[in-house]
Length: 113
Length: 112
Image (cartoon, rainbow over all chains, first blue to last red; front, side):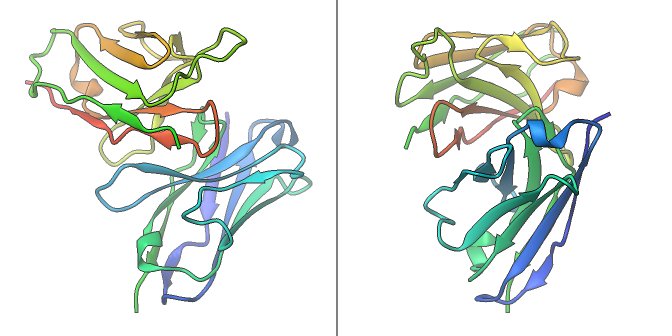
């Protein structure tokens, strides 16, 4: 059974940093591109970042480019999202996804003073 | 960026009736390889999104055959035949033809 378990969320002040992790199991992690998608409270879905299976290429929307960094450790079956210079508009539930077909339970990030 | 526009449903939909959700893209999602790069998701209340349909019309594993996807390069429909209580939630379309990946704003389904 495929499982994606996100951790690392919480309350953080504007301008500060936070790093999310997603531990994957139940499939061969290094065979798949992985992504992060977020959902602000009561709002729709917004794609945040994607990374190729080797980690050699990454992709971001303009809203987070230069502030967020997606990375992975294939030896540890773990996906990461380093979030810097956080803003109130980054407040959301962050989901780790495998190609859109599998989603984690999500982790809440609240950016507030 | 490709803009995805979803239509609304005439909620609530009577149980057992069919429901069709529309989605329009600002650019054709039909690739030269013949595949259309559109996904449909259902997010039930309090849950993570679930993939229903990919490549516009292919049902994901374990998804009921009451769900079907169709369309052209820019206009798409998700049809739910004989809606049931478990179908309640918000439905999203998403294009994965190019970055940035973009979603529609969602269509809420309520059952009567």
